Length: 494
Image 1 (cartoon, rainbow, N blue to C red):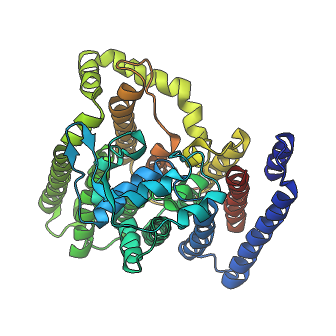
Image 2: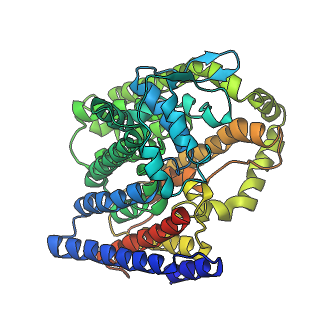
């Protein structure tokens, strides 16, 4: 229905290639049907959620990668520049006077300039021209103007770009052109996302179907199939909490391997985004009985993990402080405003969620912010997917015993993360792109709160009654992606 409406909108707009779009629509319908048939007969009655996730993620993800031209993702050109400099061994973006940027090949900017240095202007017919640009030895200093300034992604830790850097490095071995490098980075981003999601689904003790629906939602697949660093962050966040609750549920003692994994994952997530640091405190939910030396060992491990996580996070912030001060000159004024007007700031936060709350909810898993707000997705369609996820929440039949105090603790951590996300956006984006002391927090996107959904899973009670079969949920996932593909086609072909 939504696909037909979209084609009709094109007809009203006097787009000439309606017949081509109808053929493409039929092709998409055929592809999605074949995917469903393949999964149905391949797995028969064995609906193994981790395996199905892995297969579906890779099949859908490949389509997402090639249906969206390079640079059409949100800030994808900025991610590209950051990834390239890391692949050259530059882990901290250099600063020069009031500029933030490395010395990089001019061919990178030339590739992006095909569409006038505007990622909302890129179409399919630009791909051939972009692919024709070869990597050259000629270099330039980036950061001179808005179109080649990547000060926002310069703040990201190199850790978040490991998959994309691997893709770039492999492409460089074959002397690939800039466009191909970017597509290789996308592919490795998808592979990492699929693998970590698979590992998390294998061990998470509750809400497997809900997690699969979230991971395979259009918004999350958009992140995983562009050069965005959010796919890495979301996947690591999920794997950390999956491991924590898996240890909580099991009867055996915690092993050294599990402790080491928790320690590494906690530090990794703190390096990715400091706003997610409170999730590390979930370690305290693990019973003292799981440790060989009971309470003493638990407290030592939890405190050391938290201290190291905070330390590396603050260390990275201090390392990139010069970049932040050059790129976001109004942020210190915003910090002062918050400090001197705490009550008013709390009111601003509440006002923001009252005014924009529905929009955040709409854009959690689908929404209109996909591909830099280029897809005009109907609200009803976004709500449809959210409702499917809510039903999976309500009718989750997996059981995990967490006492009321533990649930309140999870809820408190969730609220702390929401507050930190909002405050970070208010300091970094609102101050510089709106105004200091703005009456709402400007710049938030719904997908920023997706990790909170993984935590909410553990606040619900099991429900033995089911209203949907597993394949109905899978059909919802594939149907939703099929509709998004059509919107992508009509956006980038025009």
